[in-house]
Image (tube, rainbow, N blue to C red; front, side, top):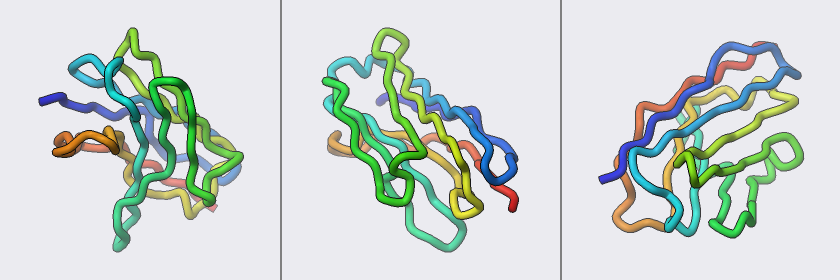
Length: 116
């Protein structure tokens, strides 16, 4: 079972930037897709960005043009660069592999708080 550790969150003002990292305990090179999710208080967890092993990326409309996902398979790490942050981006951010069944155990996530 791969373990996931997210980091890089924090408190930032609206318009600011953060870079999140997700370190996997095992190899992700054979994993077709890796993704970043977020869960705001009182809301369901949602997939905001994903990247395939070939580098194809997809984004939720709410973050398109502001967030960039990348992966470094040599380091078993997935990144999420978040720019032009908005208060509505406030959430706990998690990574996982959206095409793996059963889903990997969720990490502790990293809190992102955007103040207005």
